[in-house]
Image 1: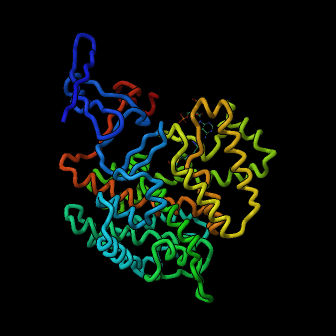
Image 2: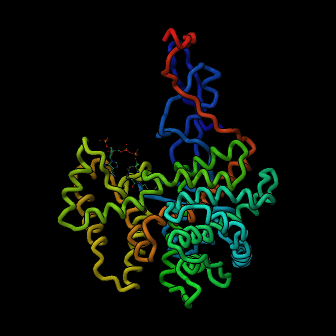
Image 3: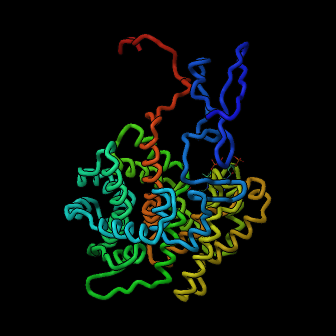
Length: 429
Ligand code: CMC
């Protein structure tokens, strides 16, 4: 549906391009026919001005600091909903009724176990492997275990694959953690809610009882909600691009996990906590702030800045509150990392460099402190992000597969290499 027209003048040629409006957010100029009409491509490395798809799932207004899932603000979902309710919303488009929620919870819960052979797969890795390396391998391997849900043309198989992914990610993430620290795997316990079950699989041991703390379970659940989806970020775009070729969903999610691992994306929570530890004390903050501002120093303040948010990340506000709740529950009164974080945030929010460049704390700034307090080592932080983001990846992947106009993603390029030349025999070079 074309809402208006944009005129592009190229030399003597005028080209009309349709401009489309969404429900919210900037209009888009549809350049799909540009090459056919003019023989030129558009150039936008990093996609800073390019909408790669049409979507009904998540909306972000980066200037205002707004994040909506299916129209619902993230703070309302995080404070009033639970993670599986948000999963349902992302996957099906509406909040569930009580019966739908009960049925959904039941279906997810019945898929929490992984094929027993998977445990042998884990033991093929070195114990000191990074858990994200293990996750890339093990999630990719799911397609070798669940052949009956890899036919992407069958809606039933797609639904089963979605349930499996949401249900099995906590089990796989907990197994990656247990393997990492040399403890036996703990099977899922289906009478526990999603977050409590995950904490149980991570922190229970066969030799003593483990009682999940409801305050910590609620915090874990909220962390999952805050990471559930974030429209067309790098890992989601990776999942969509991988899926556009018809690859099965398990392989696509493994591709998303690989992309998420980078420190500019999901790896930032690990990097942010490492940075806070490196700073160590409030007195050293000015030195690091000066380094972040120095053009000749590649150092950046991890957990600050965002491609889309040019305002306070709405997720960071809720995360900060959750951090205080967790530290309060655990009786951690003086956490030096929290002192460094609070002071760093205060300084950065009043510093001209950060104000001018609109660099605000993002979700990763506070999530690391909370996850550390919950008992996770830094190497697990990005794994937890991947666990939570899986539902977003799956919802976006399903939306793409169900789109009748879906095509394989195939960007073009501006070639700046050598023009055609003739092969030179080795003795003449
Ligand atoms: N510390 C210091 N300076 C920064 C920072 C930072 N964290 N982030 C951006 N800048 C500066 C940057 O040097 C550039 O300055 P100039 O215009 O003078 O060259 C300007 O701000 C714009 O930066 P950019 O790299 O062009 O912006 P981008 O949109 O390409 O990058 C980002 C966004 C998130 C990769 C970047 O802000 C960053 O590296 N932040 C630290 C890593 C981080 O916290 N990532 C988590 C993102 S949120 C979770 C997720 O989505 O996974």
